[in-house]
Image (cartoon, rainbow, N blue to C red; front, side):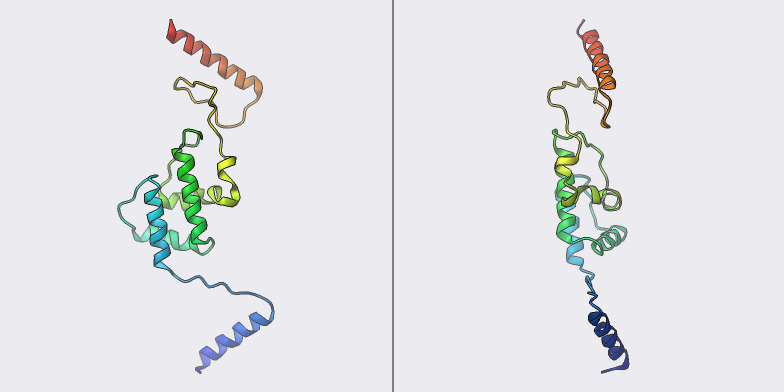
Length: 155
């Protein structure tokens, strides 16, 4: 055994004795390809090719998250984005999603119950109600303005 391997093994033994666990995730190009395929199959913003920048971003995210978690987050994002049941309509590209949106769509974030839902009783007539929570008075004012606009278009 070479001196380098002996030192490395001694360090690993010491870490193990202290109760620490090392988790080494391999640089797995299959996982990167799988995530890219899931993204494109979700039809959010289809990318024609997997470039080096996208590969590096996926690789960095794989250091923190399991590949199945990432796939589920992409599927949650696609379901919310494509469903008229939700008011969330912002489309990221894959790299931006992984950097900015991933945490919000992970299963433990419960995105399917947490994201703002469309109001089925409200015929918006092309006007979208505010997404942020508003006071009842402000909501009533909004609805009154909407009724005025609707009445004005029917005359």
